[in-house]
Amino acid sequence: MFSAGVGFGYYYAGGTTFSANMEFGVSDLISVGPYFGFTRFGDQFLGAKLNYNFYDFGVRGSAHLGEPLGISNEKFDPYVGLMLGYLTSSVSVSGGGAKSSAYGGGVLRYGGHLGARYYLSDSAGIYAEVGYGVVPFMAGITFKF
View 1 (spheres, helix red, strand yellow):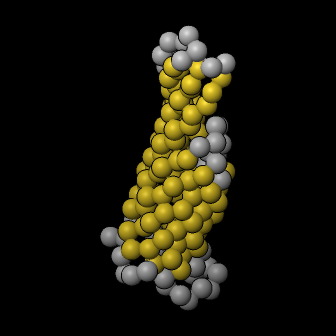
View 2 (tube, one colour; view 1 turned 30 degrees about the vertical axis):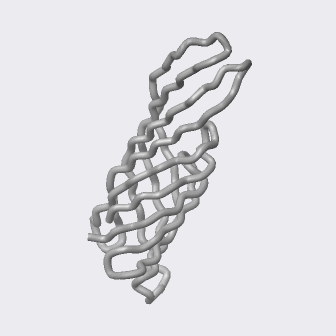
């Protein structure tokens, strides 16, 4: 599967997150794959404008709960999972006598998610998730290959 979405309430700074992830089935119940997220957040401080960029890279694993919960609708896919990744960030500053600058470094990330997909056709659907570690709420589209 390939999913792309928009998240609201990025944990470090607020703002809006754009994400993409892929999932490959390990079994009928388990899938794993890479994750990428980008968040841009703007702020003002002492007359200067600050633009923060956050880049999240990681791997996600999900357990698909439809069969274990006895849900017979194959278009509905509830799931729960974990994410392990890496966050890197930068900031640019302008105005208020400040010069542009950037900072780097990164931190290890972990998180969890609880979500559901609903397939509108055999290969395309929508999803929504609540989570911890990156974004509290995410929604978007899913394509199944």
